[in-house]
Image (cartoon, rainbow, N blue to C red):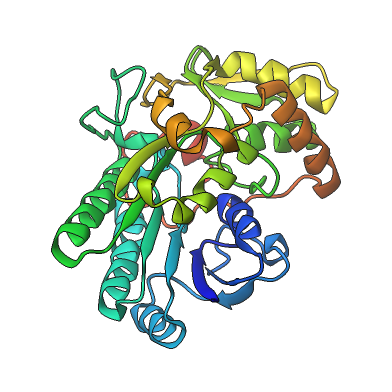
Length: 336
């Protein structure tokens, strides 16, 4: 029996990889994306592309009514934690209210068997290391606040309406199809883009802040497989790499993969969680057969091969800044 599946953000980074995992006999995949951060050529073959926004309530309702989706993978978001302090309205409109349009449509249609949501370890905040699913979230930026609000709404939608869900909290995911031109997020892509333009890699602060950088092939297959594992329904999972690296260490790895000597330009430190990495015992229990534990060196090398083929991209500054107070100087210089 054929299943209709919706993937939001299907032309984006993680969305395109998840969609590629879902295109198989017996599954018809529809990809919804407004192309604000993704690229149509990232869409895998076999995906039925619909250009549009999750903020278009009428379009969302129309699509759910027409196609009777059985599964929804919600990956559309503007995932810039640091910038979210300065684009609050934009953040909540796209990352919270747009999500509610999808949840409402899923409940009203009644055909959705499971709603898969990609949240973020940004919901944890700081000083909860290693971050575990049992910890009480304490998000410290509007992006994390919006993600956690959607998590809570999905819990409520299950209790009130019986809508099943699976929530994933990926972190610092990198790999092919990342938007190399984005100046505000995805540090590995930023580093590679700067190197290809002959610029030094920029680091906020002293570079000792740590993250567990996660290669896409250890994340996307897990997310895609979740709809076929009912034991995972209505649960939350961290997903990503175990070993944290400092941003300074990362810069050395990226430079080596790109075949250049590392050149660093250190900028004023910004207000951010300094150390962020999570535990993964739970996701190993449910999805361990899909996790390859690809090393940072191997993953960065794979991404570097792709980045060199794509070439440097000229990112555009964000034009909708709402709050300028305390914005990092390096970003405020980009504002038109």
